[in-house]
Image (tube, rainbow, N blue to C red):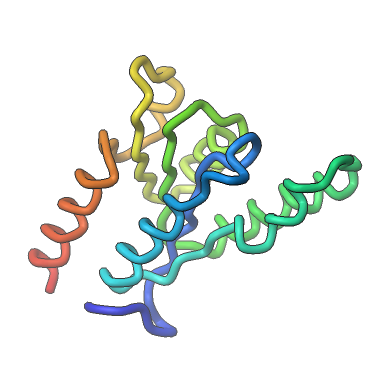
Length: 143
């Protein structure tokens, strides 16, 4: 399976946003890898860019952002989190995805991760490169 199609499995791409607004290039790299492996990527950053650049955020808007993220996780087949730093949002999304029965993959570069992260991750990768190798070997096994 090379290249995403309409019937491709969907992957929710989680990663730190708050405080990382100008460091989102990992999303481009991971999206490309996933799409080349035949997945359709659902990336909340695409719609939340303006929200995280706003000076003031009201509670109602914050609730809508969270509800949309949870809805996106529900309609995805797989959850992938990139965690170079601890992120409250990513941890909450990971918890929700796991509790919703989604397969959860985490690229985790933290040195001493919380047991909560480890317990909710089905697969842990130490780098994007390690994840890339996994995708390539998985594609070879199933292709």
